[in-house]
Image (cartoon, rainbow, N blue to C red; front, side, top):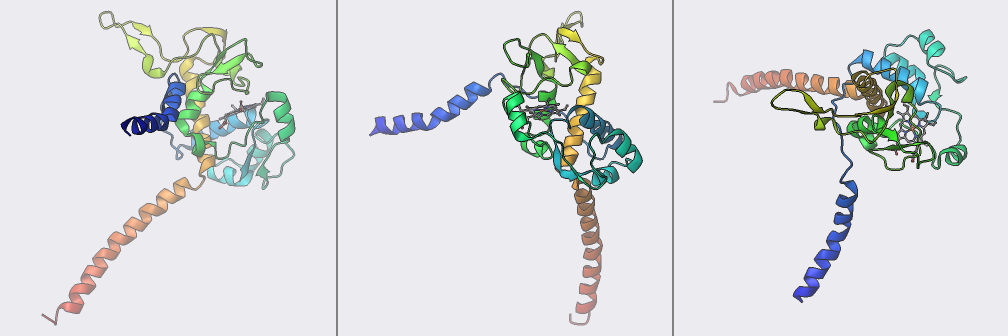
Length: 253
Ligand code: HEC
């Protein structure tokens, strides 16, 4: 009897053990997104349109809504950020078919409108900074957050190509005596130099993730603002209700 219980416990725990074993070396770097930071969202949108849109659509979002939310004038948007023949009011689609995507990359590039809701900002931030050289892969790169990823390192001209898997930012350590850095977080050796240094690239990716956080919930700002207005209303109403209560009961006691 005891043996059976132990055995079933063990079998029940097996999947958990498998999970923890697989996730051991997959770390996350942390950021705090801010969808009220419009300059950041604008820079993120620009990066997205230039480097991602060709493969990943944002088909649950519309150009005109984005332009309004991000304070981008219509003519600037249409001239500089729209590379298809889409109109101002259309959905943000691209022309890559799922079959082509599968044939070219092994798996089709998914739509990214809601990716920040699914993966979370930390995951995206780590992923987009986590490409490194791996000759055994078809695209010549692998990723610390997405083992054997099918996506090429499309931001290589900005980041450069890391020679081996980057470290978590929390790995940054100083020699306590001399104050010198022993290990930098992130990428330690670059195989190919990019046009940005590490902190510039981190910031660019922050903007990009911030933008994806916005597309995942374009009304987040409104939701929060309305929430505060509701609280304000309730506070005022509480005073009115209290006064009314006193007025109604004053002759009864
Ligand atoms: C050349 C085509 C291409 C471009 C350009 C591209 N990607 Fe990808 N991306 C892919 C493919 C293919 C996958 C699927 C990888 C897989 O499943 O192995 C992918 C996967 C992803 C994923 C993982 C989605 C998930 O939840 O599984 C994210 C996030 C992502 N890309 C973000 C971006 C961003 C941000 C950019 C722009 C900086 C970008 N991609 C540019 C091809 C591309």
